[in-house]
Length: 140
Image 1 (cartoon, rainbow, N blue to C red):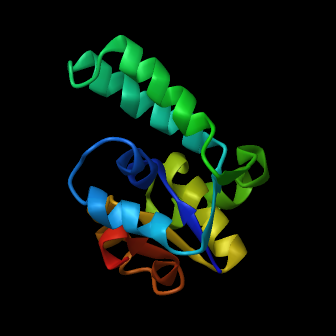
Image 2: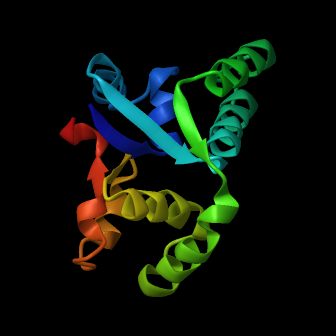
């Protein structure tokens, strides 16, 4: 069984039809274990709120979706346990602390963070010690 850190851009695709949603759902077909900073749940709720605001989801659908995401089998790690490492990564990479929390967890666990954020992946390519810890959802 493989262990992966997943970010909100992947998890939302498990529930809402989006580009590369098939790739994200393929992750669920194999015996993987998923982990994320507890920030994941705020991140996904914010994505749902944006979709509701744009009229892509009704308010009732949004509330239901947030509840379903809160019950998924993703182990969460308190962000405060990752904050110092995430801050150090932001100083090196220039990324937000939010993205760095996921990355810090992947580095700590010696695994990969899976994301659909291609710009984030591209921005980390120059960092040879960090880039092996991030992968595109399309790779799976």
